[in-house]
Image 1 (cartoon, chains in turn brown, cyan):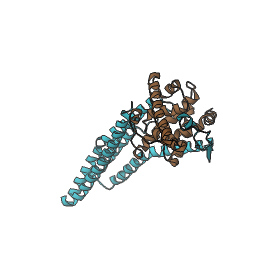
Image 2: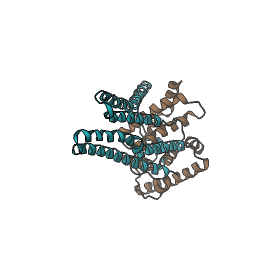
Image 3: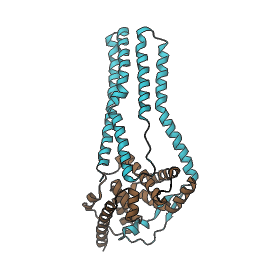
Length: 166
Length: 192
């Protein structure tokens, strides 16, 4: 049962877990360690899986919790984290090139505080407000506000990037 | 082994599209590998938790060995150190090892958990003088008195100074660690 659930989770969400680690760790070597830790936590967690939430929510909760613990452990080596509101006030140079845009997006995510980071990563993975609420434990209204801020922030930054590139 | 997912013409102006179609660099992790890692982790946790008690048992063993060589009031230092070690071991047991976060906790619960754990650790470090250092003071004072009686005050001064230095060093290190944890607590508390 535990093994079956783990294998199903990896088959369905393995790639997303790889992307998620990018949001929490900038160093590629450490990112692999984090990914291994997430897989380990996930496998161990399925002993307690009772199906009260969807497999996706469970996988993301375990992954984010493991990643947040990782960030707290590694925090001394990372720059100070900021909230969505603080990030919104910062002027960051943009570039439209795909890789640079992705790097910028990744750097932006990595600077966010855990709660904002979880919301933005879930939103980027295509989750809707209800699913993000279930994942984070935030109220629907709170999630909606955060998603609105994320959209505004990203629209501003990425449109500016496109204009700069032209 | 690495897997590289090819990007599906991502649009740099659409962050969701860009994110989901990035070149996915992931490590293939087999079930067998995860099982082995889990077993290794459990062994490591077991040894880490038992190490503190093993150190205590060694100290008690060493001072019990001394009991055979001393007699009368000179038994006071080893007896007091044994009692202090047992008290500290009891405190370590009472405080317990670091707790594990429930796997499926939501992020708010997860942050609260980390906050409580950090506050618990900070309190333990902040009060280390009371539960870790102070219990050894009577034993060391008794050892100092024995040394003064046996070899004179001048000879006992370096012995006493050494202990004061060690105590102060342990206390300073713990206060420094407590301050560091305090900063982490402050940052976590600033979460919206």
